[in-house]
Amino acid sequence: MESLTVLTMLGLGGQEIFLVALFVLLFFGAKKIPELMRGLGQGINEFKNATKDVKENIEKSMEDPK
Picture 1 (tube, rainbow, N blue to C red):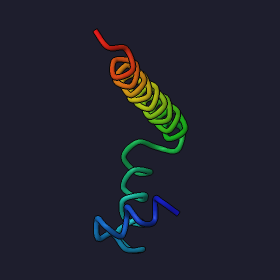
Picture 2: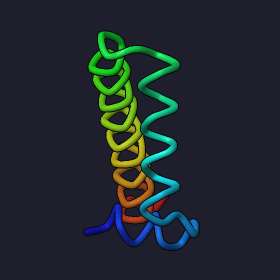
Picture 3: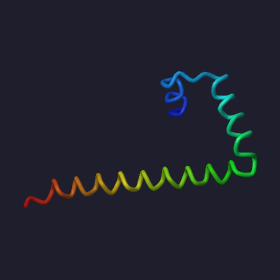
């Protein structure tokens, strides 16, 4: 549901999404797409973990008066 909201905020409709997907398929090939998506997923997970760590450090520093 969130991805649809992001796409509509970017002004992308069905045809634009189809063209982008077609371009990615032609440019990278069907064998490389799973590898690219796996790398993208790992990058997103690392970003989430980093933001979680920063949030925890900020909360910890606010709890401990110095």
